[in-house]
Length: 232
Length: 232
DNA sequence: TCGACTTTGTGCATCACTTCACAAAGGCAC
DNA sequence: GTGCCTTTGTGAAGTGATGCACAAAGTCGA
Image: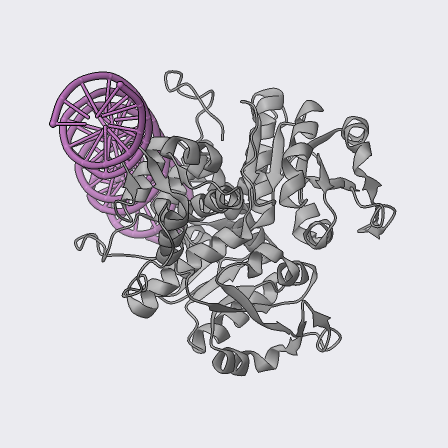
């Protein structure tokens, strides 16, 4: 989580909520571009991205005035502008630590390697896995973590290790100067200020779904059951 | 996204933001329980879950008054209450559609099957994959989707298919009565009201990280480059 | 050139969530 | 009991996001 002092109005203020939606717009735009659509209105793009058109216009207005009134947005131009804003016009070297089922899936995930990102290293602590060829790379031993980061200019690390190893890996990559981490391990990582951690947690998503599903089925938590545990 | 009419104050109002954090608290509490901690203060639990203690207290207050002033919260009791609220005291049958790299990873993911969830079906359209044994289940053909959902009481479906197949799968599971979907495919699913879709998108998370990383490296988007594309 | 039409960009009201700060509530020692 | 200490639960203020509604700005046909 990035913390800003509330006084200074953010170096070039794009709200977090907007940033989180830009990739969505970008994907919708790429879909339009594939179908050779030249321009798109905020209304149409909003539908494609699954948001409200007023919100979309406000979001885009944070980047600048890239639309033409009465016409809409030029698809290619907007793709370029959003890509640039998101930093996808440059190449980011990504290392994936933990080559279990999930790590493998990530390494092979097409959209992952798409624009802007390049898997530059796969690391695992298990000697059994080290040496495997996955997605065109050879899995290296976790001991090499620091040197891989340094030598290949890795700036984003994906942690796909078991929960128990995650914090240690996290500490090491931060010590190596990495400040952007995507964490798949089900733990809350402790990091110094200035380091960005984003978390993807499959079981949390399922639990949120279960909550809503329960509401739909019987209007709320199961009642009538009494607490059977001991209370100190 | 669940929509409520703003008039009625929500059947039993727990804010979405709170629901999204309950699984986090639950995990932190389970960690404490493993270490045989009997009671915990909001401050300590907040640190373990990585949130502000005032927020944690307000979140928990939405469930009821389960704390004891001057003491804190009974760990076991709170685990029970949160589990019940999230609907984890009952068993949810989950089907995973799409058994590629990601689907396999999900099927094997331990925390996935943990409390409350049971993988009751694995389906894929590829005859090459059908019949494979994964995580103790046999992969079935997608044609069986409706019958698997009906026969095994599946109430939550995980879509891990390619983007192109996702909407069709989505339509079919909804037609079968499923109203909770966890979508890993990089598309915006169109669903009727009353259906809950949660989305996990790996490339979006990476793009958000890239945005912040770019800010850190050079204080903003790359400047000086001029737009080289044609503008209609 | 003009007028009708379309669509953007944004001021403003509203809503939701967060955080502060403190009174109320309970435990515990004596 | 009584009084002190700790910690909860919550009113109230603050912050940020959302969505409406419309003026401004542009296109296009005649």
